[in-house]
Length: 299
Ligand SMILES: Nc1ncnc2c1ncn2[C@@H]1O[C@H](COP(=O)(O)OP(=O)(O)OP(=O)(O)O)[C@@H](O)[C@H]1O
Image (cartoon, rainbow, N blue to C red; front, side, top):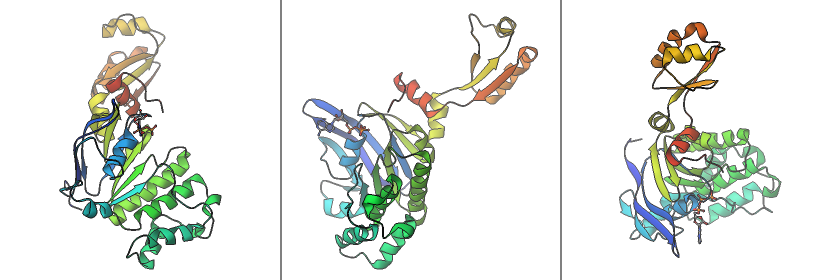
């Protein structure tokens, strides 16, 4: 994998429906072989963005380049590079997993049985090949959705909220499949999500709100940039602590933002005789969202 090589570059991408601007001047830069999460609340514009990037919806304005090729002029070259997993499954419920895979493979010119077998292994479908899709669990169906979308070995795979409604164990299994795709197939993964914890598995996160990208970086970078670490103290002697630290009108538990662990340790040393309990916590992605928008991310 060549780092820093961009598979997808997006400039000032916008979409309006009537007078409503649902995506507003979005810039994205996606590295080859990376895992990107587009995080945002309901109605933020995630699906519309993915639909434009995957050539399903035409942008009102802006430019999208795959490997340097503008999609408007190079649709035929660009389309095979793209795989898409939709929010709603495209599988035939009455047919088995194996039949679904064969039918989808038949839609392309040159997909060998070896490739189908490879995809079955990558998505851990071996044990459920004969089952009708209607009898599968939500997580199993998602894995079949992913399998059919990567049969043609796309360079980049888009997934629109692939884990919505799945329990945490099942979500972990989906992330594992996606990591497999990334590592074994050198595939670039772009998914939308409103699950904050999903950003931890991503190399890069774009936060979208009201159609605009409001922050970009790894989850760690965003937490460092937009949140503070918090030292929380329980004590029966709040006034003594406040005197030492020069604080006024504080309540218990005492919550002290700290720039780093060293500062927290120094503070604790200064008030050590009065501390009954303490905890030291990093900010979370929810704190990042609150810092950026002034509200919790409710999904
Ligand atoms: N075809 C359409 N016509 C008019 N408005 C639309 C259309 N499609 C989407 N919208 C509006 O655009 C906004 C963004 O929708 P979009 O589905 O892209 O958001 P989202 O972040 O994917 O949300 P969700 O998590 O609910 O899917 C919403 O206000 C939605 O109502």
